[in-house]
Length: 334
Length: 267
Image (cartoon, rainbow over all chains, first blue to last red; front, side, top):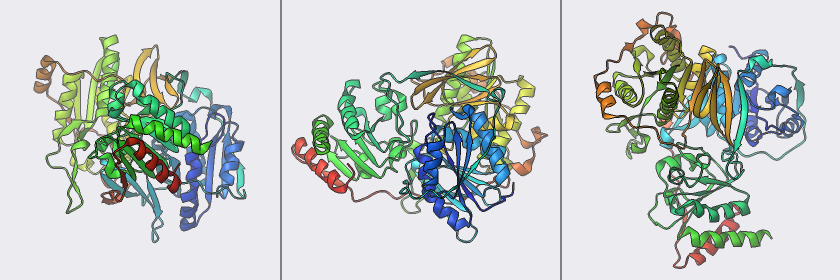
């Protein structure tokens, strides 16, 4: 399709309580610069139920407009309802580009939308720019397990779409909310939603493992030695309000659930702080966490490859180091 | 039940090295494997077949002639039939073009093998890591989808899929026909038996070319039919200049680390 405007859209995914997921607000930061370079408005698109908080947050983080679709059927994400709404909106308003957070739902939704609109989508981007001459978005993403970076363009199809990795961009300071709020009354019939959630089986200890949205992650690997070896890791994570991650070696040994796994066959993360404990740093693990802002590695083996990507590397036994570190942090925060 | 599993032959990315002079990937000598996530999709199909022995599993791949080795591996593990989609005009396809070609090929395979109740794919391929081709096939066919699946069982007209979510595991009912993409479950996929391996080696794998897909619109295939283009590729810079702490006493190291992290403002 043809773009009707030069506007850039950011899809703001919501939680079941209607609040915005962090990545949607984060993407308004690069979105602001890109919209200015493309010469259009920055529009946040909020879909959910009881979305007032999400709308207010988007409006105070740089959006010129906020398009809101609110309804009971959007409380829980469904591929069918969200694809239908987003495509209807794109067809009506014709933006030139759209950013979608690369969460589990974002990566479920993006390809459906791009395929229905017959346009290009670049997955899991870690850098964004706009070409000065053509004003095409330049989407940069890792491939081959992080061994190679590729910059992708979508020159002839509109809108240009990309999913963007959470945690890569930072939320801007909240400012005055000047955005125009546009409410669209769009509903999807229950019969058009072909999936139904029957039950949720919680993690063993009821903890939510939101690695992709985490600001701090404390991870354990083979060096933790067993399921009980995660105790000092959990203790530190609790003190830092962090999420517990794990390497494939720890997951494959059955010490912790796969939902904690970081790396190629697990989650790709980009927190502000990543603390790797007893993780040697196989390329598959590095692929999943090397874009973290600050990496701390604690390992007994001075030659472990994890030290090559670490900002702070500590050669030592995690069972001796972690309790001291946890205690120091507790004291400092008291 | 009639199940189609889409698979991709990929280079084992753990074996990939970077040419230090040219700053490019060295792909020669890198072993080719069945994309691990596709292996989990095949295992999920095999588990349905364990429960319903009259199930047929067909595997489909797009790629060069060598990809038949990957299809044979799937035949050895659990598949009953295999098809390769291969044509020079399909080369250079991005995810949208690839999913379009595969969806057209699926219609052709259905003429030969009967209608598929479900299509299984890996969550993503470990070379491209896009996770887009599965959902895009579902969109081309107008099928509902479930992503991040771990295991599935049939329940009347529905498929009940256990899928990984942030809070744990969700059980989702999806109407058939449907498409499910799989992530890594808590169990290992089965190994092929010697007998199945020998039969797979002898198996004839039909190749479907553009000429076998009479309805295909070739303006939507290959490099020219792909909306996205690769502008450039480069090797990421390795971080250097990290601080290393290696004191005799781990407790001293721990204090030093705490001081550095506090001074840097990261904790």
